[in-house]
Image (tube, rainbow, N blue to C red):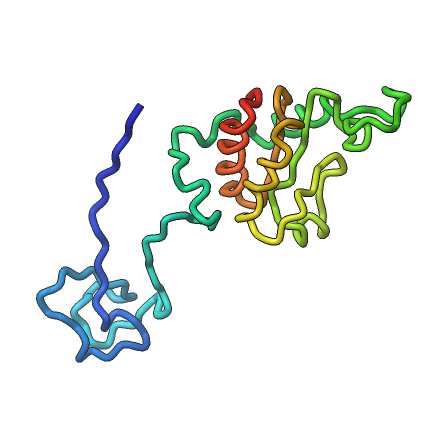
Amino acid sequence: LSATASITPFYLLPSDFKWSSDDDADDDSPTSSITSSPDASSSSSAHLFPDLRIRLVPEIISTGGRLSSIPPSEMGVGYLTPRQWHDELKRRTKNDDDDDDATTTSRRSGVDDDTVLIDCRNHKEYAIGHFPAAIDPDTKTFEQFPRWVDRHAEELKGKTVMMYCTGGIRCEKASAYVRRVTEARE
């Protein structure tokens, strides 16, 4: 499955930025100004976003290039709505009296033996608050997450892996990577 997108380029002149002088503008360049006035040619129009900078980057969230090869088609697999997440987490959470062996990894994590719950955020975010059964990969940046997965791949193989982050970008990339490395169930 291959998909392509056709997006019209968005051009800004140096004069469209707060700290640029109008003398820097190249009159031959295509332009699309962001102004508060419908008359874009008006010299009195105020810029709505004077500090706006648009850059093309290889990754939205840096992984040192480790996850940049994951295509969008591999992301979003197994996505759960908030209600589905709540129901699934509740179904997979163990009660204190479900197991007498307090030494098992699953017992310590609080979820059934077939489930691993991973917080894809960094350690500081984890410390602020997390689901009681969540594993902290103890990362400072998301760039460290693939290494954590590589070190724990055998423990994750054959498990149902549930993961969460703050806005969805990290866990979408992370879940695709975990599936590649461990062939985890969806």
